[in-house]
Image 1 (cartoon, one colour):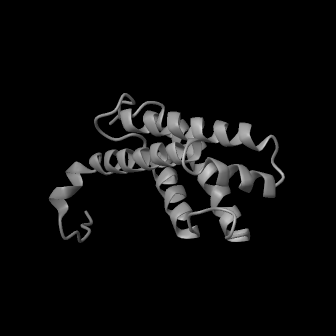
Image 2 (cartoon, one colour):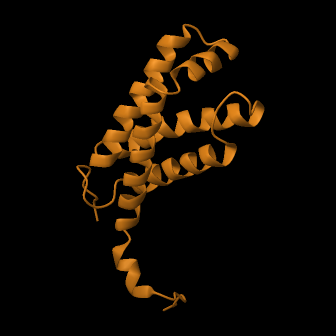
Length: 138
C-alpha cells in the first residue's frame, strides 16, 4: 500500500466544493461580461466585430451577450454545467486568440481569457460539484 504526502489530507473529503466555487465565480464573471456587451461596451464590441469582418456586428454582439448571460446563469445554478462550460470555454478561447493576435481589439488582456478558458476546462472535466442541479455521481 502506497501513501502520498499531503499537507492537509482531511481537506480532500471536500473535493466537490472546489468545482462549486469555480462554477459560481466564473458564472458571475460571464453574467457581468454579458451585461457589459449588451450595454456599456456594446459600441466597442460592434466596432471589434466590424474590424474582424464579422457581420452583422450588432446581431453577433447581442447574440454573444445573450449566450454569455444564459451560460453564466446556468453555471450559477449548476444546470448543464459541462455543456455550458464547453460553450463558454470555446468563446473564451476565441477571445483569447483574438487578444493574442491583436491586443487592441478587445478590452481585457490575454491572461484574463486564459484563466476563464482554464476554469471552463476544469468544469468540463470535473462537473458541477456540490449544490447544483447536475448531481455528482460518486
